[in-house]
Structures are given as C-alpha cells and as structure tokens.
Image 1: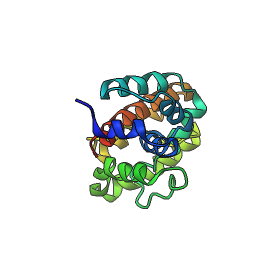
Image 2: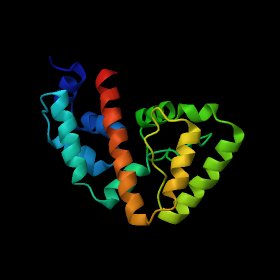
Image 3: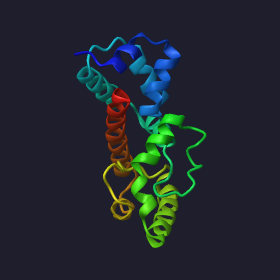
Image 4: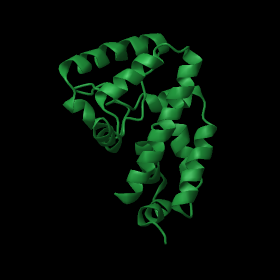
Length: 174
C-alpha cells in the first residue's frame, strides 16, 4: 500500500518537498539530496535513502542540523528559532515535553550544562529526547561532557540520525 504523504511529496514542487525534508533534518545538503532522489517508492525505501544520505554527510552538515534544535530544557527556546522550520520547532517541543514537568533544580542544571557543552564542543547538545525524562537527558549530558570532541561529534550525529528517523515517521502519518 502506498503512503499518501509520500506519494504527495513525490509529486510536490521542489520547494515544498525540500521544506518537508528540512522539518525532519535541518541539514540543507541532506534535504536537497533526499529531494533529488524522488520519486521514492515506499516508506522503507525512504528510510533507507535517508540513512544512505545521512551517512554521506560531514561535519558542516551535522552542525547545520544540530543548530535547528533548541537547547534541551530551555524554557523559551529562541536558540534555534532562526534556523528551524515551524514544523521542526513544533516537533522539538513535543520531543522535549518531559522537560516542562522537570523540577527547577534539573532545569537549572540543564541550562548550566548546556552552556558548558556548547563552550566545550562548539555546538548544541543533541539527544534523542523522545521517551526520556529531563533528569535522564541531564545524566546523559553530564556523561557526554567527559568525551573528546571527535567522539562527541559522532555521538551527536548518531542522535541526530535517530531524531531524523523518528521525524520522518511522524511526517508520514500527519
């Protein structure tokens, strides 16, 4: 059975198709490569293509994608507003919704450690927040602060890949 969203995307103009992919991953090179692969015949083929294209991306592409995410636990996420699409921002709020229930101490620590992370590595802390509490995301952040930049960059790219796959799934059912 054909997915209606995928079928519509295959037939959409390039600008609309690009916008849909940018909501799933903020790397313009990744999104453009996905659009160039149209038509994509199935949901499985879309997922596989997304993986192949992401595996060919490099640090500048990863950093561009990371910049589209608000800081984890940020109360008024202005950080990524200039880079993220409206759909991407809405998905980020949904994915990080557990942070809104976190206590003040956890939110304060997240804010402080997010700053340390950005100073240490030069990019936003990225974690696949779906299903994780704010306390869990803080624990992961503290552990990842101890890494060297290369290892952390690769971990962040892996987390971005997970987020991208989840968002492709959301996009296909909305």
